[in-house]
Image (cartoon, rainbow, N blue to C red; front, side, top):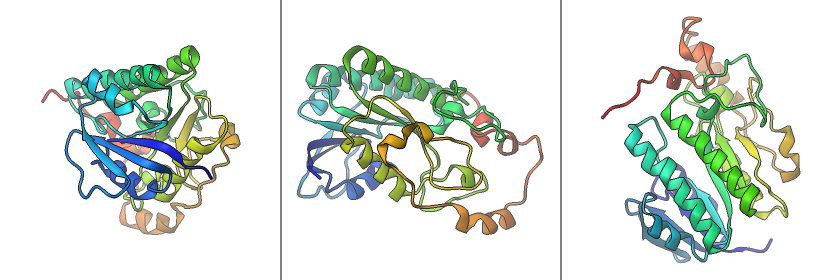
Length: 267
């Protein structure tokens, strides 16, 4: 497999950005790292550029010379609108404008399951299911998905719009039995999105194997991605340690779980 020339990883100091550094280290000749805060221990083929996604000129410099972007930057939980707007709305616009004017790199856009969080757990969704965000964070990711589609249709910038489930070393609760995504499966998906001859602008559900899954990825079989890990080894433990709550509790009703009950944060 031919290596990419230069891969940009945004949000490189965050949880998934940190994992991306080790899992994607051999994918490109050069790895450009970016975040608002410094990263620890820059390696031989890495360079770090401290940058704010809300700064359009800085983002243009970041993207310039890159042939791929793994976009993990921005706000990753429910926060105030001001923080979400700068990182996830203005920041994503800055990213796509930079891509448009500097060479149209292929983009892996880390979207979220919270774009569809108000669907019930007894509903099965595919890529063509309309969004139903469960908060400001989820709504900002809907915006990012739609902006990616605009730049694909207008300018041919290919993007994998990946609705990441719950990406941790192991599932942490009952809900994650249906949403868990292992690091191995996430980064094998990132790799497939960058090396396939044709990507387009698909919506992809980022989830490992589970018998209680809510999401259908059959439309992206052309990527050749098959998750290898499964949440099932933790099912008995989690179902025993976390009894089923009230039938009207957010986790019992909605795919977004507790996010559906989050307030609008003011501070």
